[in-house]
Image (tube, rainbow, N blue to C red; front, side, top):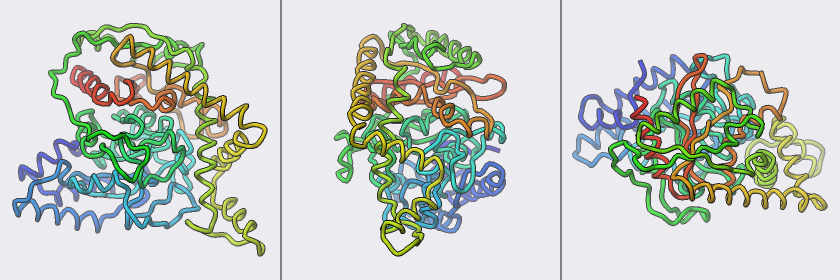
Length: 478
């Protein structure tokens, strides 16, 4: 039996229908039953989470005001720092490493009454689209364990989709929350860049990374965003705006214009859209029209350059960020020879997996003398054009709607020997990351028994608008 969602869990505990401890025990029982097969969690903090639940029950009995997430079990992707928990980023290099502090987003969850249950599996340092690049285990899709759960936030997506927890955090750099949300049939939200503080997130691409929540409904995502969002002085990229609050609405979208980018539905533009996915999206657009919206065609002419642009910029930033993992300051150290250079080389050679090495090498190349202008600076100029395309499209509509992924969940091992095919899994998610705009993925149907994800995008800082559109669709689709 699937456990209730975020809002329902809190309501039951506050009303006294159940206790935080009893609810958590159900959660832990479900994890014990499902995790051996699905491999969502790397570590489960049963003892500390039960102590936390007991503390929350005592606070409620004392008459204290319950927090917005009182008693809600939460899972964290293993690249988020949480004091007392292993933050290994899915890498051998950080095996056993515990952060000395807690990420600001995680602090906000705990301050709101959430219970940290454990850390989830992920592609190493966030480099992957299938979960297969983890040094520890590959999380498996609950709808078919022989298929990918997506990546890189695969474990967090599986934990929510299988009902192990009602809420989990991941990180989205080029689609690492939206893509697994789509493949697992749940909701995942990448907010505007800077909306949730990045303090305590192990960096992949600093101009792209967004801490992002998973839940089983848009309403539950809104509950999480009220807690997670808001300015943080410890993050120089944090938006100076108050927390995101829900706007009550009746669910209709009368007068709204839904932009449909022709390039996202044109196989010739590089999206490679499966027919089953196309059919599900066309049906979803008809449901938007039933809500009172009008669908209008728009164009994103530079979309075809998004994948190349993203992988140049993201790998360049990754090569810089991962330079800190050298055996001196963090994680495991491997000694070789008698020099500092030999020790660093041995540590990185043995600690990093194949995909990490591939991206570090690519990033180092595009930043090197003689190639910086030809690759990195040119990619930044194209990035500005992609952002401009979105700005012009939003002059014609309130939100854009696209598929989240070109296909449903593919079989494990199907693309692992072809990095380019794997990278193309992100063709529809990386544009929003490059532009820094909010993007929501929600379930919109099935094809051949597998979930199809729909992506809703809005202008920068229009996070509430995107969530409102998703909530209206979800209620219509219920």
